[in-house]
Image 1 (cartoon, one colour):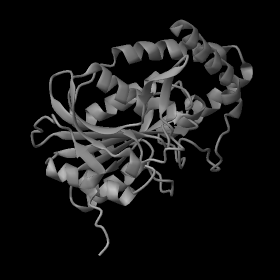
Image 2 (cartoon, one colour):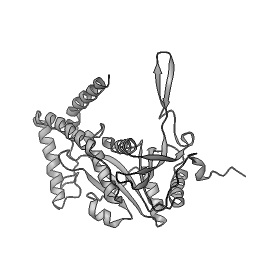
Image 3 (spheres, one colour):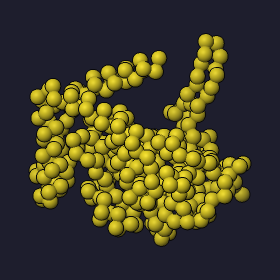
Image 4 (cartoon, one colour):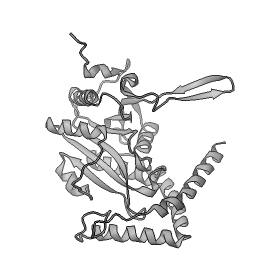
Amino acid sequence: MGTVNHPEDLYTVAAAAPTVPAGLHLVAGLTGFVDAGGAVAQVASSILDGLEHELVAEFDPDALLDWRARRPVITFEQDHITAIDPPRLVLHLVRDELGQPFLFLTGYEPDFQWNRFVRAVTELADRLQVADTTWLQSIPMPVPHTRPISLTVSGTRKDLVEQMSVWKPETQAPANVLHLVEHRLAESGAQVTGLVLLVPHYLGDTEFPDAAVAGLSAVSAATGLIFATDALRESGREFLARVDEQVAGNAELQRLVAVLEERHDTYMEGNPVASPLTNVDGEVPTADAIAAELERFLADRRSEGDAASD
C-alpha cells in the first residue's frame, strides 16, 4: 500500500491558534504568477501591517515550493548571516478597522501539488464554516492610468458580477491556483468571488498604489469589511503626478495615452466594441513607447527610494 497524502498534511495549525468563529469571510491573495502593479502584495502588507491579526495555520514550503526558483532572502553582515526570510503561505485571523473578524490567506502561489493544495483550502473553508471566499488578483492590460482601475469579476455572486465587472471576456488564459479554488468551491455550492484588477500594463512592473486601493475597495464591496486606504491614496496621488509629468513632456506618450483613453471611454459608453482593450477591428493598441519612456521614471523612483533608505 502506498502512502496516502492527505490535504491536511500540507499545513500546520499554529500552536497558539485562536478560536475561529463560524460564518467569517475568507479573503485570499497569492503572489508569484502575476501581480500587476504589486496590488496583491500591497494589499497584504496593508492588512498585516495595519490590522490586528493572529496566525491560524501555515503551509509547508518544502511540499509546495521550488526553492531554487524562489530562494529565501538572507541578511549577511560582514562575516555571518544574521537573518533568513523564507517565503511563507499563511492563514491569519484578522480584524478590520471596525473590529470585524475575517480570515486572510496570503503568501506565495504554490509551485507543486496544486490539486492537493486546492483540496486543503476548500476543506479548511468547510471546516472553519466560512460564509464565503473572496480572492484577488491583478493583471496587466493596455488601459490608461488616467481612468479608474476596472475589474473582471467571476464566481457565484451574480449581483457582484453585474455591479462591478467591466470586462467580461470569453477567453482562455493561464490559471492562478485560486481560479482552481474558485471552481472547486462553486462546484460544491459554496459562495465564492474572484476579483481581477485590470492594471495599466506600462505600470505593471512597479508598485502602483492605486491598484492596491482598488483591490481593497473591491474586497470591501464584496464583503463589507472596512480597510484604511488614506496612506495608499496619498502615495497614489504622488505617484500619478510624477507619471503625468513624464507624459506631459513627451508628445508621443501623450498621443498613445490619448488612444488608450479613447478606446477605454468608447467601450465604457456602450459602443459595440468587443473589449476596452481593442478597437473596432479587434486590434490591440500598442503602448510599448509608454513603457520604454516610463522605465526611466520608474528607475529614478527606485533610486530615490534606495537613497532615502540609506
